[in-house]
Amino acid sequence: MEGILRKCILVAILAIAFGYIEAAVVVYLRQIFHPDGFCFPLTSFPLIAESRNLVLVEVGREAATIVLILSAAILAGQNRHQRVAYFMTIFAVWDIFYYAWLKLLVGWPGSIMDWDVLFLVPLPWAGPVLAPILVSLALLVFAGLILYRDWRVKPIKVSWCDWLGFSLAGLFVIISFCIPGPYISHPNYAEHFSWVVFAIGLLAMVVMFAKCFLRRQTPSTPSTALRTGGLGAK
Image 1 (cartoon, rainbow, N blue to C red):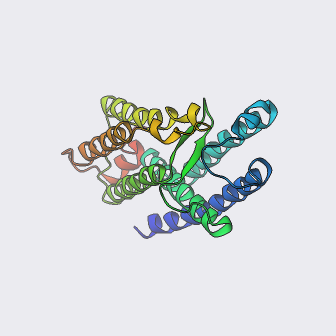
Image 2: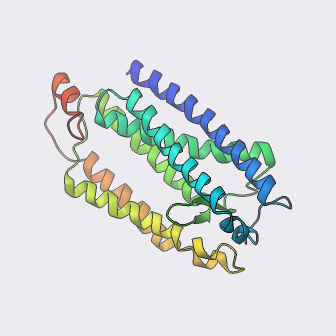
């Protein structure tokens, strides 16, 4: 368990530092595109959309962010379920501290209900800050339980049906962010975020994880657990 805790601390430090880098980039972008202050509706967003090269650079940066998180998780984990857990940990801590650093650097967000542009692929994702924070907290819990079961040599078993369920649940969450994307420059932007769709997706993720976590199974030997990784072969 000591080794897992040490790696969790290391990946958390990496994620906190990465969150600062992300926040610093956003501070620069807001100075460029929102010199009068970043607030919804984003009346200057259409001007950004016209700068095709800048949008492509930003999309590439977002893709590179996921690659870096995935690479760190692969290096930290000894098997597949550990890598999944470390990916969740890095992503969640990075996301939470991204907002913490922005709060420290520029005093934003003023509240967890302030809106943010979350992603740009394949179209803008938007929603209140509370929503991605809730997803990140859920991921942290999932990661902790996965690593706990790994330490107990009782890896969580996930079937293809379970993966399908997780994917559909995640799709609901993504859809809830994508729906308001085209309306972030409209005065009624907040009306387009569906807490119902978001809640269905998040609760479905929790239910699917609980189903896998509570599934009865026979204990695995250390060699078998390391070879299979619980979630599949290495």
